[in-house]
Image (cartoon, rainbow, N blue to C red; front, side, top):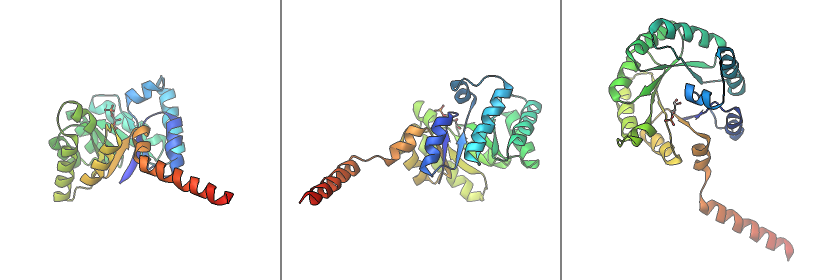
Length: 219
Ligand code: E4P
């Protein structure tokens, strides 16, 4: 399973990179706004900075809602850096844009996916990734992990090459459950990635090993 970090914060990306287990980054307009990135030129520069840091798999989202706008943005974004994957929302115009991108060798991530039906359409349109938002599904009292299982099952039935990118991760357990369900990628906040490393028995065990070592050195 690939690990992407879901942030536009360069510091957090550096921290995740330093672990040596990071495979990419996903951003969205909310995450970009959170970093205070304003204006087209600054947005482009920020995407470039992320691409130069990580070198691969950087999702950058279009903000147009019509086919022409989305495909123009897709052209501009993908020309920025080879690492760019254009994030396109699951709408009627979005599906047309996904197909156009696929026909024109532009990599895509279909975002805002909340049902298996939407995932099938995105795969048929040639999306490289589909992003089911499991945290938001859980928030609305449905089961996000069940959706990942369903999409993975369907894609395997038909050998769809589209990868299942579990998004809207809220905690480390979500990551583990997505791995069990066979998600190809998880995009996670830094805290959820770091949460995977933690176990109280590890801390207690290490403390005891070090105390025993110190004692053995005194006698
Ligand atoms: C996916 O690529 C989105 O950026 C993201 O996972 C949305 O997560 P949220 O529900 O925490 O906003």
